[in-house]
Image 1 (tube, one colour):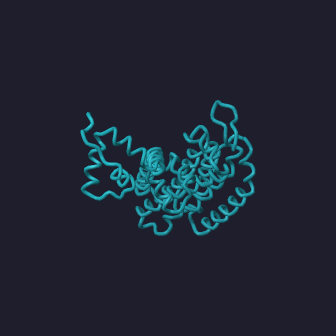
Image 2 (cartoon, helix red, strand yellow):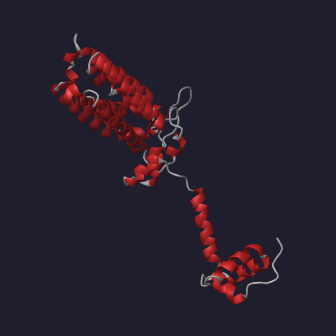
Image 3 (tube, rainbow, N blue to C red):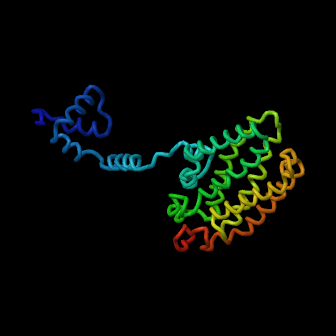
Length: 284
């Protein structure tokens, strides 16, 4: 593009750079600068470069900043620190595909409970958080594991945060699924204390067995316990009676105390950092 035959006077360029040039001179100067390299060069010599540099820096920051997803935005609104929200949002078991799978499992379980007995739902629902916790941490399951290692978080705290997030998301879906058993009353919520106890026990076993093996062992133990407390008929499910729920509450308290005492074990490079067919990793 060729330069025009006229140029903006120096005084008008200074006023334009200071933001003091009023329309219509501002509009004509703005349009003229698009096609006149000489005036743009003169403008650069009279304008303060600091606001321009600051503007480019802000623009670069906006372009480079990651766009938070819906889970991360929700966590930020709840007051969660940005780095913590980023790590929690990266947990694969909080993604829509996982939540959809959990919801589908609960729907199928509710259907089976209507066909067989409502206790079927109470037996299956506590196992779902175990699967989520096993898939939320560790080199073999977490695609962001290396990032989590260098994050400004204690390993125990990160695992606990993700476990709470998994348990919370699964519990919300399970509560909604419990509405599908209106005839069962408050007993339809009898899955919560077992789910909490199983999750805490799985976490307590994680430093020695790793998250996957710990979840498998606890899940098998739950199945064996159920088999021993269902003598002949589902209506005799002791674990979901008032006494059984008190026992589950005591189990939660005991496993929570045990988990608290085992916190130093999460700093030891044991099987928590060991992927299948690989050597032991390291803990942060």
